[in-house]
Each structure stands twice: as C-alpha cells, then as structure tokens.
Image 1 (cartoon, rainbow, N blue to C red):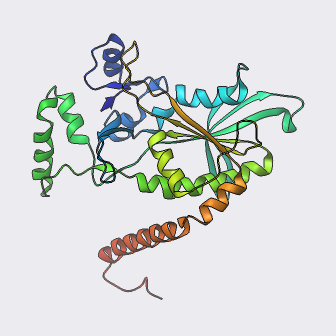
Image 2: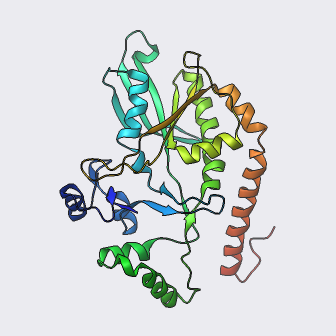
Image 3: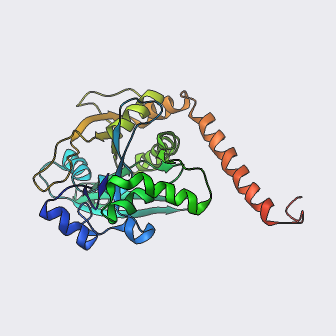
Length: 293
C-alpha cells in the first residue's frame, strides 16, 4: 500500500515529511482523499479473481498526476513548455468534464491555441474499504492489520472478512463510454485526446474493445498511455511507475470496436442494476404507493 505517495514502510526523509504534512507529492498539495474520506492511501496490493499474480493497483486518480500526465504533455508538445489546466468543464448539457487540458499559444491554430485533452483513470475499490488496514498503519501496528478488520466487522455486526477488491470491470464499462463521448466532442473541435491509465487495465480494455493500433506516423485521434509499477524504488523512496505502452487509434475505429464488443450489453446491465438498487432503497423508505403511476 502507498500512503501519501510512498510505500507504507518507507523510511526516507521525504516519506516522513509527506506523512507529517499529509501531503500528496503527485499534486504537490494536501491529500484530497484524506480530506474527503479520512484516509491517505494511493494504491492497494491485491490478487484479483481473474489474475493469480498479486499486483499493486492505483486507486486514487492523483496517482496518475505528475510524471504520467507529464509524459502525455511531452509526447505531444515535445520540448515546448505547455500550460496544464485541471478539471475543465466544456459543456453543461450534458455536462462534460475533462481531467486536464494542456495548451500552448499558437497564432496559426484555430482559436489561437494548440491543445490536447487528458483523461486520467485509476481503479475503483469494491466490496468494502481498506480503512482498517490504514488505521493499523496509523497506529504503528501494521503486523496486526487483520485484527483491525475483525474489530470493524464485530462493531458493524457483519461477517469477519477482508471485504475489498478492485473493480476493473467498472473501468471498462465507464471509461470505454467516456472515451467515445469525449472523443466525439474533441474530434469536432480538432483537439486530440490522451487517456492515461495503468497498463494492467489498458491491457484489459484492449482485450474487450479491440481497436486497431496505428503506426507511429499515422493520423490519430486518441492515444492511450499505460503506466505500471515495476518494483523500482526512486531515490526519494517512492515507487516508480514508468511508461509501459503507448497506443494510438482513430475515433472511428475505436467506436466501431466498442460497438462490436458487447459494451452496450454491459452498459445496459449496469444501468438496470443501478435503477433497481435505487428503487429498492426508495421502497424501503416509503410505506405508501405514491411513487407508482
């Protein structure tokens, strides 16, 4: 587990300073996850049911800030310094948000700027949280992490299981559609789209949406950049996440591949499940049938 940007057992001065200040080295600011949820973890180590190998998964979007996002900027602009602008809302109905836009002023380009959009995608947790493990770390009792899960289970009256995993399927359903929707909008205004994600998940995405990779010099609309942990520890104690793969494609080929992948069925199943879950919650709260028409 990475905490405040460093392995939980790192003893470097930089790691100690980040923990003391609850500071995120990827955004160079206070840890947003700590402020929102009370925890400061960036990644978890987990063995998924479909994968016998234990892997580290980035579960905070900000883990892909910094160097991975910078790679996308440098890939497009080269040595030219570009301004990176976070969280840009480009349409309101329907609302369309871009994680980043990088641009340089360019009088010869439409609108006077040359720009790219960057979408970063981490992985969601499912089936519960890793809060007990984080609390064990805070207490200096990482060797007793299992007891913290047992204690929480007893307090909440539920089964004593370590109930968390990584929701890789949700990445496929959500990101697959977002790339198509945002790619269509950006194609109309001539802005390329970069998708920055963990290489493990990019591999799954490509297996399900079998778009055609392009040669290096072919015209493209979407570039996927996959980064992953390789076990290397940097001088300051952080885990390295180097670039593994860069894959380019066109919007037309991507949407064709998505349409033929069965993604629509997965989206429908997700839609139905969420509607029924919401409806069940409403019915438990109401004693009349005023919602029925």
